Length: 231
Image (cartoon, rainbow, N blue to C red):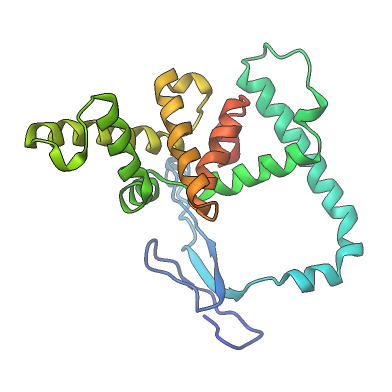
């Protein structure tokens, strides 16, 4: 690929293995073989990637005036996507759009959720859940709900019971990586627990970027914006 060069070599992309050089980001072009292509005798191009330098904010600022017309066009496209999402998410029942649903803060929220959704997967959510505060908080919440008292005093049977419930919590968190989600995809208690756990985590550690991404995802789902349109 490239380290210090103006030429960035395209090399075969291997999912889970291809990585950018330190301080750079990976640009990837993935090509998939579809049934339609196979029937037509067409072979997909090989997937490739390249390690490229990250764009610096200062460099962007230097070209801000020239970027403004393109930025406005981009934001108008974001508004279009929001309206489409709201309309399709309501299955055609929507008859109007509120200004606060398409204003600049709403566009930024939509884009933030899109960015979060593009990188979320069941596996990454599970890894986050098991390695951070989410699992520990789930144990405390469940233990309190079952009136088991202090964790150190739990019996093996109680520990196993809590473990099963924690597994369910983890599964519910993983649902956030799914497609075509709406608020109705979650039970009231499930939604309440997700909100409670994420709120506690972000209150304790506001810098938990992954928890914030999950919170952003939930905010979008609650506004009836289908996740499928953001992936």
